[in-house]
Every structure is written in C-alpha cells, then in structure tokens.
Image (cartoon, rainbow, N blue to C red; front, side, top):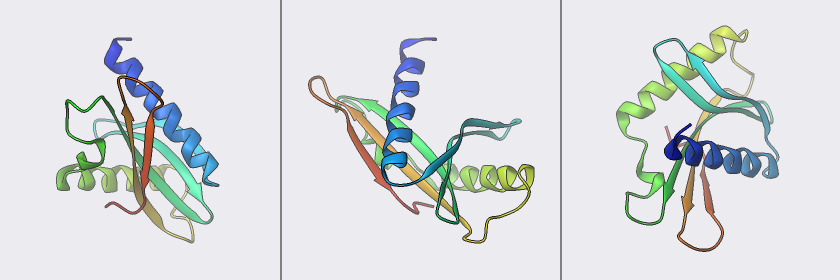
Length: 120
C-alpha cells in the first residue's frame, strides 16, 4: 500500500470511530459494487441507512475535504446506495442518507474530523 492509500485507510478508521461515537453502527467498510465504485462506510443511524464518503487531506495544501462531493460524486454515491440496498434485501424503514466525513491531518497535533449529514 502506498502512502496515499495508508492515509486514506487511516482517515476511514478515524471516520468509523467518529460515527460509532455518534451512536451509529458501522455495517460495512469499503463495499465494492463492480465498476460503479466503492462505498467507504455503510452504517445504520437508528432506522436510517447511511452511506458515508470519507475524504482525508494532509495539511492545508489542498482543498478542504468537505468540498470534495461534486454533483457527479453525489450521483455516483446515490447509485452505489441503490446497489447496496438491492444486494442487501431492500431499503430500511427510515430511508437512506448520504453523509460525508472530512478528515484533516495537520502537520502537528491531532486530526480534525468533521461529519456532515445529508450532503447529497
């Protein structure tokens, strides 16, 4: 695994921990759907299915991770959510929500983890 992959995996671990601390249950990580792509984290928040995109950035040299969900990315996440629901027996009673967790790794100090609900 390269440095970028390791950083992404670390960010996903921090994100999963944040979601769990917020009372969610992580159902699956890195779920792949053929050529469509991958869901970083699938979780349950009460009776709502949460499809969570995780973006990790180092320092402040790049755009803020929370700016990473473009309309195209949002459409792909909705398509992936439909694939997950189809594969796992249907939609939950509370519906589906798409969240974003942005992880910023500063040069010094602790990581900053932000969770935005219902981004797409």
